[in-house]
Length: 85
Image (cartoon, rainbow, N blue to C red; front, side):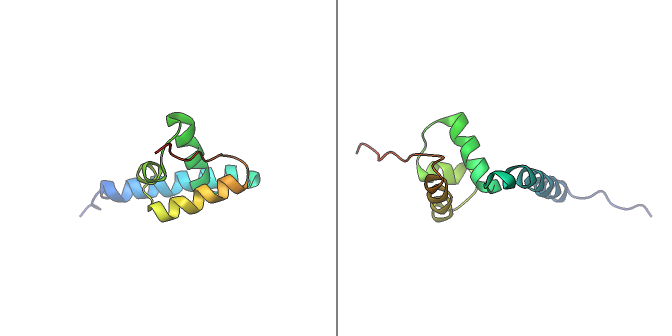
């Protein structure tokens, strides 16, 4: 009997872990986490987004994204602008 092919979800999860590990190895020397790098990347491509929009695009809760944003702001990597309304 042959081994069944791994489920696509398993393969995708393994790929995601490998990508995260690779990103982490490259950004850690610069004082960033993978989530911080991803957030900066999204902001670089999309421009200004709300905390909720960033959280959705990063598959995070708004509370967790707020922590990432706070850390990036403390490091001077982003500046938050209040919504005009």
